[in-house]
Image 1 (cartoon, one colour):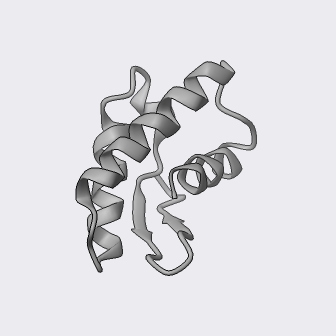
Image 2: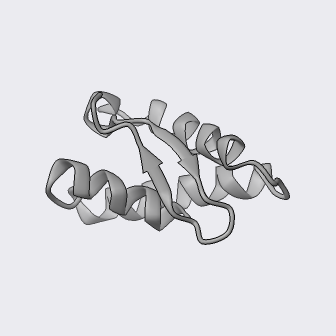
Length: 83
């Protein structure tokens, strides 16, 4: 799921997060926050966990759009691409 969040953001911005260690660090932070919410049956709870991590990133303005939902079955991520 964490990788799906980063991949969705990269698609929205048309490129990879730089530097590469920042991408890896953000994925690790997302994984930690997601695991803290488990178990859950709510994709919105998972989305809120993702948004908590994205909100504390140094350049959080560049990490918006916000995650709206996470599909708990396949980990697909819905983002708000208009932010």
